[in-house]
Length: 176
Image (cartoon, rainbow, N blue to C red; front, side, top):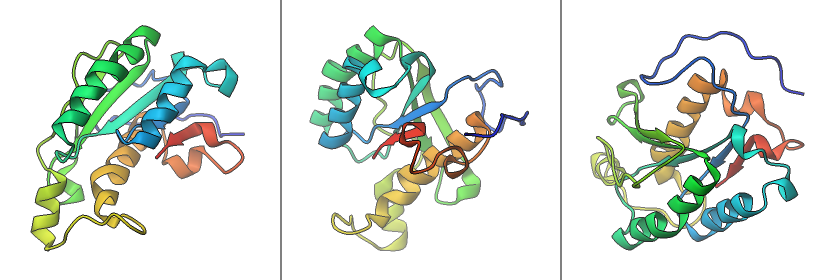
């Protein structure tokens, strides 16, 4: 059972201390996370999900194919709007963690998918002299996606994802 929420100081502009979300779905725009999200949106009760207390997170890396963005806007954003699900789009502000993150959009009625923020995954890879990794641990996306999402979850939900979920309660943070 998760511990009760405690008061916290907001670290990001536009957030409120009255957030009552308890489920986070991480949407990476790939086939797997898109199928998972569509499944949750079309049958939330069948999976124990309350869409009113669910947040869908998307971390804009600046490296998505234009077709991916267009398909997401055509098919998935209407589903999010239809169900009134909170959709939060985030991005890194710069190379260093101290540069922080930006909330590009936070809406239950999203109209567009933001393709990039101030600092892109490609800029990250160029700055450290690496290339995308498509096998294994995918270290190239840890800072562009995982770190950004974890920072938002910690600021809004009162603690890091690991403190709010466990293997026995997978709906606390869902998706890949």
